[in-house]
Structure formats: C-alpha cells, structure tokens
Image (cartoon, rainbow, N blue to C red; front, top):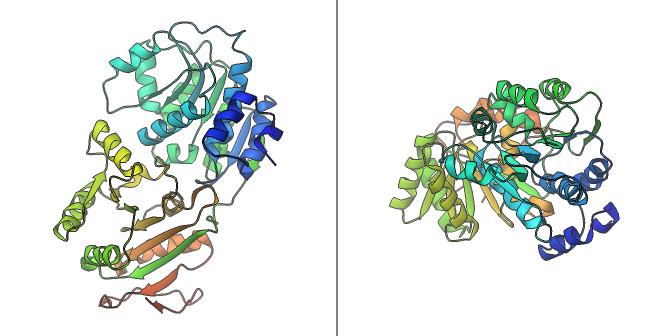
Length: 396
C-alpha cells in the first residue's frame, strides 16, 4: 500500500516523497483513514512505529480542506496536540513543518523552561496547529494569550506518559475548556485502565486500534545485557566504546547528577560526551540535541526526559546505563533505535542492585534478555538469573 491509497492529497504526498517516505507503517494504514473519516480514535502504538505521522498527516489534510471555510481569529487555534515533554513538543512540531511544506498551514510549539513572551507574540494572529505541554498551555490560557473557541481537533500524544508524570489534573482543566464539538484523538503506548478512564473524559464513542501489545518490542532491535559491578559501569562503557568503535550512541541514566558525573568520567578517558536533563536550560538542551542529531556529538547522556522526545534517523544504539523504573520506560527508551523498521541495538549494563528492575522488565517483555560477558569485567556480586527464564551466557 502507498500513501496515495490512504486518500492524502498531492501537496502532502510531495512532502512525504521529499523526506523519502514511500510506504505507510501499520499504525498509519489503520489510523489515517479513520481520522480522515472524522471519527474519534484511541490508538495504542509503540515508539518507532510512525505514530506521529499517523495523526499529523490526516490533520493537515483536514485543515487544508477547510482552509477556505475556517478563518483564523487572533489568539485562536484550530488543532491542539498535547505532549508530555518539551523535547517531544519540539519534535512533533518539526514533523508538522516537514509534512506541511507545500501547505499554507501554520504551527507552533509552546513549552516551559523558556520565556513565554515570544510564544505569546506568535499566538497573536492565531495558529492552525499548536503543540504544547500541559503546564505551559494552561499558563497561556490563564493569561488569555490564546482562545479555544475555534478548536476543531484535539490530540493527546503519549497519553500514558502524561499520566505517569502527574498531568491528569492539568489535562482535565484543559479538556473542560475545549469545545465539545471537536474530533479527539488519543495515542498511547499502552491502553491501561487509567488510559481508558482518561479517554472517557475525552469522548463517548471512539474507534480503537492496537498495533503492538505492551509486552513486545520491535523485532529488529537486538537486545542484550552485560552484568557488571556498579562501581565499574563507567569503565565498562568506555571499554565498549573504544574496543567496539561505537558510533552515535544514546546513553540513559536515571538521575541528573549521574548524567553529569558520567560525562566527566568519560571525558577523563578521552571520550567526548554531553548530557541533557531537567537541570539544564531549554536552550542548552535544544542545542545539544541538535548537535547530536547532526552527528557533531557522538555520545549523549540523557535522563528519562529524552526517552520519547528524540527522533533520530538511523540511531544505531541505545545503552541503559541504569535500568529504568517503571519497567514500561524500558520499551520507550530502546524505541529510540530501530525506528521505522531499521535495525538497532539496545545494551543494558546491569549490576546486582538492578535485579528487581531487570525482573520487572523481563516480565513485561515476556522473555529474558540475552546475557553476555566482557573479558576483564567479571562481577564480584553476581546478578541472579530466573530459573524459569534461563539463557546461557555468551563471551564477547
């Protein structure tokens, strides 16, 4: 199936051709026709499956088709896309610009961590598509910097992550302000009871699709772990980078002070890295991400804020320096590689302290993660192996 068979118009097809997209992914095949038909939608799709395009493309088509009938008024918006993080808001808006290249449709991303005055100035004449984090959106609404009376479309992107981050009260306040006569779309990695409860506040009767269960990850992502004592993790990471001549690599840690410490430890071994976390300004984070995407920076250390906000073509490798909690975050982290059907590699450095998190992750996946050993890094504190899920170690 081609994108043209989904009913998308020529300007959108031309933009897709410019970025090299020829065939839709499964989520796109199923979601785009439903959204074009005008139905509300609740969809479960893992990261890396082309989810953003599955709602952005039909929104662009519908907004373009109605351009002659819906005049934008000052400080009004026609479509609202809510995301959990600043990084994801920036990424989604960048995709909108890319796909709307040949359309007369405006877009803007608003988020905290930066001065709101420039954002308010951009909203003065109205914006077709606004991508926003919940907190900043409410701030702008309270300041009467934008109005929702002309809103036609609502998208909740990464709804599960927004609930995990405690945005439920903000979401309810936002939804209460929106016109009831709108098309609503909810996208989530999983359709849990909490997500369904949230969906009940968004719409009464929606189409539902599920592309991947929450126990599976992309088959082209090669997953493996190395057991290592906690105090030797940075040495092991340096060894792997040098001995295996790793190229661009995204490394996840749990805490922001751990990110800064790891950058320093790698630097002492001659490996240039940088970090993004909540303690750094938005401008700095954006510049570091831009350098990483452009290949100017090979090694990026990130806390979980980046798990769903980084979209890099051909990122070959993700490393879990620390295992995440909750376990679902593991899937989103490794979903930064192996995107759109490409091959990728996910390596976890696991110490005895990580055992409980490892068990939770393997339970979620439904299988054990293959274990390997690295010569010279034999552990003093062994990491147990589940009797029910045993795989032999391999030496590399």
